[in-house]
Picture (cartoon, rainbow, N blue to C red):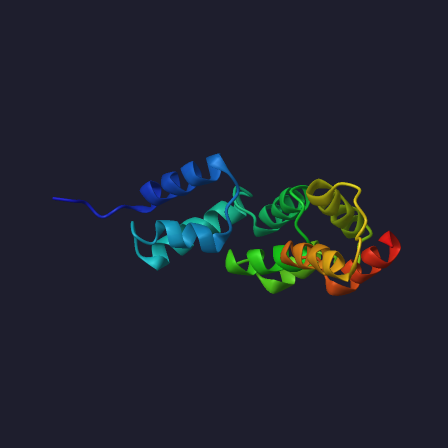
Length: 150
């Protein structure tokens, strides 16, 4: 016979998840939903937020830094955060697409993939642009970068 989990069981499961890495509330709800009813899960999440053990702001800040270091741009990061259930206002608060750091991140992503090679022709320039767009950099920033590379 299986017992229904109580508040303490769900809280311990959530804390174990948070011990490995930050999670959004939406991720925790999804992962814990098989164990208990949503009302109980929400109670636990509210308690974790009140004790500052879970924070969507903290998750968002860390996630942006991680993905930027890995060479991804703000467009892709914004999309990924939305998929992870982060509130759009929280994303806007932490993700400034006009920040000069994105130009540097774009340059580093380009250099990692193509080295210091300049586009030899239009076809190669289009290849560079497609790669950078796939990585999530805004079109305007890509155009500015490629103009400066000529």
